[in-house]
Length: 344
Image (tube, rainbow, N blue to C red):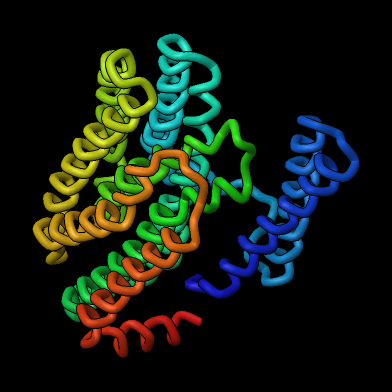
């Protein structure tokens, strides 16, 4: 329905409700792990009740079974099930390998780093949920399809992702210092590497929308995820033995490259929008360069305490990146804002 504002408010409300309940049950009432589970039960129940009320209020559903729609939905969605499962299975297997080859402490450090690093992917996924309906609307125009407008908005989003990625990578040390105990401080060193892996994934979100749009294409999506997940498990077995937690990140990066490559190949078989892999690649390399420049002093110092000087240096690097992002998009910012205003 392209109600991006309503979607954002709903998602944030659910998130803050869950956080508040976690604080209540874990920090105040001392329920421990049971408190986390109880907060999940309550927040999900509230979300479902609100969803049913809202859908009913707008006459968007009824209790019935439409066999034709059900058949079409299953035909479209069943091939996507392995697509959704394979990534989670690969992540789980990686943790098993880390535990087997190092220690449970390493699993904890890797888990914390993954939580912070995965915020990068959450941003991409959330923005894509708002971008996808607009993208589908553009594809449906056929004769009036304006690929330049699609590419322009996509390029602006890539720079937006870059700002978020760089911010997470640069200030992961400070965030973990504020939110975790001393035993977990070293986990920050993994966060920029995990963020870089999700930066590799950026083209995937733009090309995968093409496959989701065409019903005949959707059944091929699992090829990319299953094959890349199998490669991830295979590489993790050897890389983790050699490099521990960092080996898992290296396996993720190589597997992600395979996933993006397959999705790009399949998407171009059905529709060529005009995306440039060279442009995506150059943006990634520039982001990587800024990450290296901004984090070099922190990696040299290792687990040294957070300093004001280091924070100011990182802020300077981020400001430079933001300035270049604004300069690179100065011609498309007006059009992007106009599109976003129409989506409200």
